[in-house]
Every structure is written in structure tokens, then in C-alpha cells.
Length: 187
Image (cartoon, rainbow, N blue to C red; front, side, top):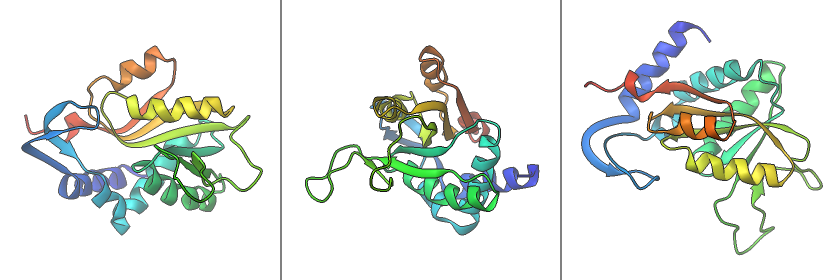
């Protein structure tokens, strides 16, 4: 991905997914006067294509075999990254982790794996759309480890810079943010 592509993606995020000046409550329980709702960027044709390229580029030398994360934020990311990784000749199998098992159907916590397949022995990148403290991604990391997978990286589209890097450093998990909140704040 070129610098121009990253700059264009930053413009799309600023236009479609960033807001400030209104107090909101985050998934972490904290309140904030700025937010990132990445779904409009992830659902935009240009935004998703640029994100797919940037995620694939970031994973080129990480040795990941699979990409996944906690629903709902990770679902679009893995959905557009998997086909882009295939096009680039470095295919990543995708999955997502349910927050809660459904009360019907196959009742799986991990979705996207073919029958008889597992995460055991696989090198995995956990992805997230927006990271505050890192707690949500850690839930996915824990489940992946319980299933025998090795987490080689946690990658977020946007780091709010409110403790996630420390959380992952303390857990000895490599962490990478494609963008940081400071790049969008007008303060």
C-alpha cells in the first residue's frame, strides 16, 4: 500500500467514521468526547479495499496463517482481508469469535472453520476495529489460546491510545495500530 493509499484511507475515516464533541460511552465503560465508528469506512467500497491492502501489507512478515477476532468489529475486517490475501498469494484463513454461543444451530464459539478443523497449531493474527484498553481483543486471544492457536499479533485499525499498548506489552503480545487517535484529534 502506498503512502497515498494510507492518506486517502485516513481521509475516509475522518469523513465517515470519526466524530468529536459529543460524550459517548465506550465498550470499555469509559466515557469520551470523541469516537470512531469504523463500520461506515469498512462498508464503503473504497474504504474496505484500502483497509484490506493495508492489513495485508502489515501482516506480510508476521507469519500469520489465520486472521480472526471478536464479533462484531472483526467480521468485516476478516471478510475483506481474506480475499485480498489470496489475491496477493499469501492466503489467510478467516474466522470470528462469538461473544456468546447461539442457543441454536451448531452452537460454536468460533465460526468460519470447516468441519473437523481447529485453531490448534496455527499462527494467528487477532484483529479489531477500534481498541481502547485492549480488553475485547484479549478475550479473543484467550479463546484462541484455549483452542491451541498461537497469537502472533493483535492488529487494530485505530488505537484510541488509552492503554491497549500497555495491556498487550504486559501480556507479551505484539500489537500494531494502523492509525492512532492523535492523527484525527483537532486538539
